[in-house]
Length: 138
Image (tube, rainbow, N blue to C red; front, side, top):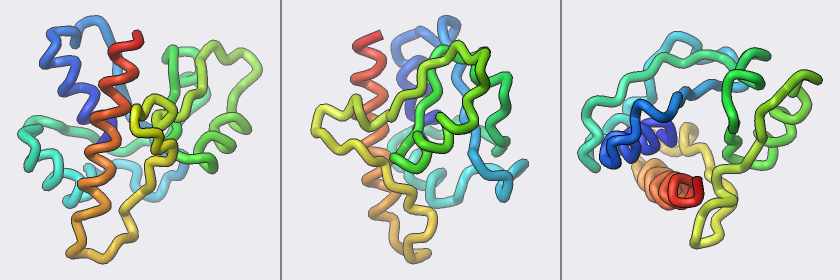
C-alpha cells in the first residue's frame, strides 16, 4: 500500500521521472501475486485506481540499487539489517519514523478478520502521513 500511496503522490506532484519506487517482501509466500483485494479496495476508495504490482522478494541488489529501503515495523528493520550485504549503499529506515502523529509501527492488517477493513484504512492513513513527510523532507 505504501508503494501505491507514494507513487500517487509523485504523480500528483509531477515527480514520477525523478524517483524509482518498488515494493518487495522479506518472505516469498506471495511472490507473483497482486496486492490483497482489501488493499486495492482501500486504494480505490481514495481514488488510486491505477496501481498495479506483483509481489517479489527483496534481493541483495536492492541494497545498492535504492537509496532508501523502508521497513514497517521493528521485525522488518531487524531482518533488513541482518540481510544487508557488506557492499550495501542504501539507508534502512522505518517509514513510521516520518509520521507526524508519532505512530512508528505500520501494522500489517493481512490477518484481520476478512470483512474488517479498518486495519487497511488505518495503514492507508499512516502511509499518506509518512510518505508526505518523507517527500517533504527529501
